[in-house]
Length: 302
Ligand SMILES: C[C@](O)(CO)[C@H](O)COP(=O)(O)OP(=O)(O)OC[C@H]1O[C@@H](n2ccc(N)nc2=O)[C@H](O)[C@@H]1O
Ligand SMILES: Nc1ncnc2c1ncn2[C@@H]1O[C@H](COP(=O)(O)OP(=O)(O)OP(=O)(O)O)[C@@H](O)[C@H]1O
Image 1 (cartoon, rainbow, N blue to C red):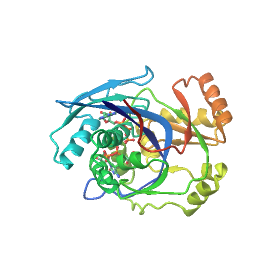
Image 2 (cartoon, protein in one colour):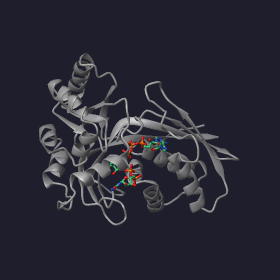
Image 3 (cartoon, protein in one colour):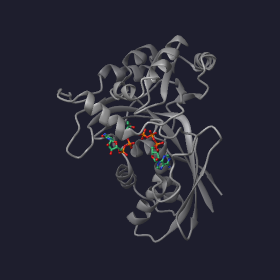
Image 4 (tube, rainbow, N blue to C red):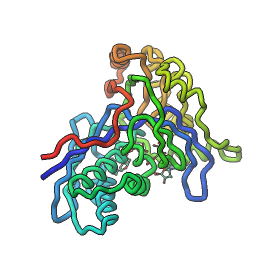
């Protein structure tokens, strides 16, 4: 018997970052939104743990570990240990989310594996336990379980759903190279050395823009405190921002720790037009995606 769970990529509509804490993490105030790029994780009971990666030709799988370091395997083992089970599974990951792109692809795989094994083994793990296991795997993993649009606090792992009545369309511009998240947070620290870093907060107007589905207002309010440090590491990304605005997008925003860039559009037609314009300017690794979409959910049980 095998079971497949689909989990979405995330973006951060607002990523407010506070000063580095003694625990090595930065306090965050972030608004997550799940977007329509997905990884599918299929699990099947086996005697030994193993992970198998599949791409669609579009995604570069080069950086993804195929052994015990893979976050999906760590998730599977954590769930088994939580229930005191001596069971194992083969975990197959079909990647649609860019690797090290700032869209939490690994986190999606971890969330999908938790849900898939919970259902395959009929463990009926309470949601609070799944969320706690998810938080132990990575700051972005709990949101991949929940999906939709949500406030993230703590170091991003405390997730509260937020009213979002918009039907949003984004163009995702992928990059050929990845950016490692810890390096971008370090660049943030260097940029703010010797300065006071205010406690991060979500502006109340952003909740209104989401509740009203107001694209122009949302475009004005998008903000990512990791954008400047990421651009210090990758100054060439400025061209993507210039091209995005020239192509007619409402706004351009770095996705999480980058290097993917997100272009907010009024509707699907505009997003496809912007994508075509970008192709003319040499940006060929792009996708048009809707948001918000569901968190990790079962798509097949055979
Ligand atoms: C950039 C974001 O994607 C925005 O949602 C996240 O903050 C990163 O989440 P993630 O990749 O799940 O991060 P984790 O695996 O928890 O942490 C990786 C590393 O990122 C840094 N990190 C992460 C989260 C946070 N609030 N402060 C940090 O400084 C730490 O150096 C940590 O060792
Ligand atoms: N299942 C996995 N998929 C992708 N990367 C993985 C996985 N397991 C471990 N990794 C490691 O984690 C690194 C970051 O992966 P990921 O694709 O989640 O980056 P990201 O989208 O930038 O993350 P985030 O936005 O959460 O910071 C990869 O470079 C890889 O070494």
